[in-house]
Amino acid sequence: MTAFKNAPDQSYLFPHRHLLSVEELSAETITALLDISDVYADHNRARPSSLTSLRGRTCINLFFESSTRTRTSFELAGKRLGADVINISVGASSIKKGETLIDTATTLNAMHADILVIRHGDAGAVKLLSEKVNCAVINAGDGSHEHPTQALLDALTIRRRVGHLKGLTIALCGDVSHSRVARSNIRLLTAMGASLRVIAPPTLMPNSIGQWGVEAFTDMRRGLAGCDIVMMLRLQKERMQGNFVPSVREYFHFYGLDREKLSHAKPGALIMHPGPMNRGVEIDSDIADDIDLSLIQEQVEMGVAVRMACLDVLCRPNAVSLGEG
Ligand code: NCD
Image (cartoon, rainbow, N blue to C red; front, side, top):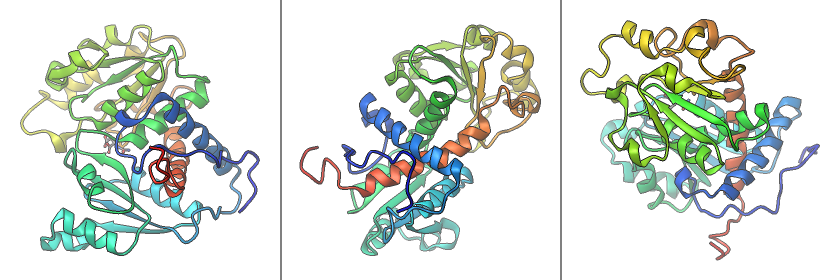
């Protein structure tokens, strides 16, 4: 293996067989994953030759929903660790011919993959598949439920820039109702000691928000007051049945992040967006591209490091396989 300046902690045992949700991760586990990701982030910046720790392992990316960042970064992460990576595009697979979800999973299982990375439009579908296969499964987004690696990469991005997560006030703004990114981030950042706010129009605010342990606002300027970090969310039209916003223009007027609205947050507040961005809908290009304010490119960069860490720990013997889980 290529030498690391600081090698990731090899003795660490991930306490689960799969990575399905942030809900099952303790603050200790999150910290361990962020520490390992940090080492990979430094390694990726130095751009040495590929590592070999996953040589001979097979990772299959099975994406039932479209994706650019998540799928590409899982592919890069696997390749940088020396794994064989296969991408299955649903449009060109037997799923189009009517094969059931479970038949697809059992077929892939029979090929002895080591890790299946799955994105699916239905909440709970990835967990269901994880119960039918012998290999480790990573949830790359299931409906509006969870997207654990996105929350990990967001936390890593903040931790590297600000130095800590504890005590920060972080606002998630926009289509909270349909966002798996919001659900995973709220769980993870709260577990790490941050205070979370959500800002959304009443039509995109989840009914159950009172049980989420966050402060909820429908007024953007009030919600942003005193925030350290502002995370914008995409309007997820593909998950909407009916009209949730009167018009894109009106949405931008009330909920689109621009310099004026951002001036209500703490001086020096940083902006994040998981991508893909709808410029002029939830965010103004002028601030999205301002490298002093925007962490958006760093989020993409950290995505590869976090996914390397997740593939790494899931390919090790884990606490469950060793009978300690
Ligand atoms: C997010 C997703 O797919 O949930 N994107 C991503 O993973 N980079 C958010 C979104 O699609 O808006």
